[in-house]
Image (cartoon, rainbow, N blue to C red; front, side):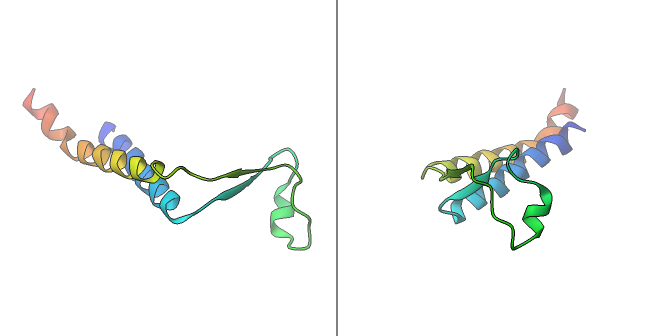
Length: 84
């Protein structure tokens, strides 16, 4: 169970780090201002309250390296528990 948990966390860190490496900025809409129907309807106006997020230059590399370390740790977990 712990191995799969750490593997999932590591893979998620790798994916988010890869996404941050590719994008320059992301616009996040406020949940209170918009509904799910507005995202489907292309004629609807977007929410007025938005937040622009641009990741720092060091963030993708930190996420990628920590994700790789966690994945490697997850693969060595069974060997560590058998030794004890």
